[in-house]
Image (cartoon, rainbow, N blue to C red):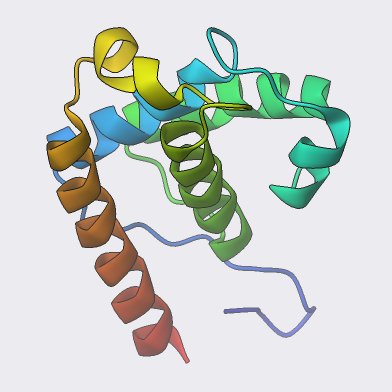
Length: 126
């Protein structure tokens, strides 16, 4: 959703504490066991891997404070967490449940819930 000047307007998602915690833990993985490259960071919507780390810290704080964010930020968070969860080459992969405390099964369910909420919210804004 954009305003008259063309800038994205921030909005909140009605996420549970567990959903927010999963997103925060997932973003945190990029500074831990994950091995991002600049090219991967760009694909995820960041300028480079340093921006992924810096922006990830900022986005984690927004999630913790339950602040509103733009559609671009919500998508960057979700995509970054999806990749870090699944990829054993660039992300946490096999180590995910050990380093985050979320089982693979629980993570998939939580990610699907967040995906549905984001999709519904974006449809309601248009």
